[in-house]
Length: 216
Ligand code: AMP
Image 1 (cartoon, helix red, strand yellow):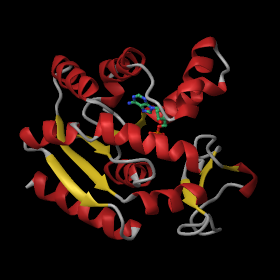
Image 2 (cartoon, helix red, strand yellow; image 1 turned 90 degrees about the horizontal axis):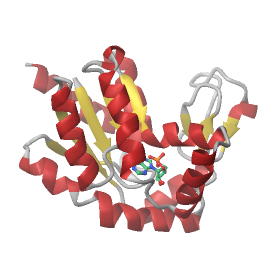
Image 3 (cartoon, rainbow, N blue to C red; image 1 turned 180 degrees about the vertical axis):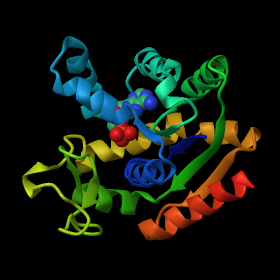
Image 4 (cartoon, rainbow, N blue to C red; image 1 turned 90 degrees about the vertical axis):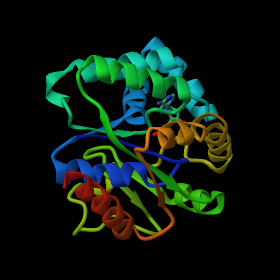
């Protein structure tokens, strides 16, 4: 089953898609992570991407769409993709529909996580990502502990775009470019709106319940 999770920055897409990927034995496909790893290589493409990420703007569709197209063509990922942060605008959503059909797959369901701006800012300022295992924590709400995280604390990093200024611009980008795809998926009758303000495990339960009901 292929699933899409989207929502404003720090809505919990990464956390929920990690949990889903683990339980369903699927792959979390985070376009943000893929772009950040290109930035880390310091390639000329990576440098261009960094400027856009730091400003909170979207990277051109042509770059993202071709990355996703390669993954869809890869048998390893066949019907096992949990998209985190893709599609990000109507053009990407339409491109995904066409490409996924071409590879004889479909999107089974789309979860839109809703969170208000105040909460987003609090979540962003505490967010930490482990550069070793890629798990995401929050030093206020979900700290890394010996029980939930095996790596050394030296691997915990703050994302460079997790500043209050950048988050406001990322939120604006979300409202202008990403929010319109809610209607697109509503019309396809595969959209589920989830309140992303609650506890991580409760949100996961709700998502899991919906997915299980689709199996039967
Ligand atoms: P994320 O990790 O999903 O919050 O993404 C971080 C940043 O990467 C975004 O603010 C965008 O600049 C860029 N990005 C991630 N996914 C996409 C996408 N599907 N289309 C365009 N830009 C993206």
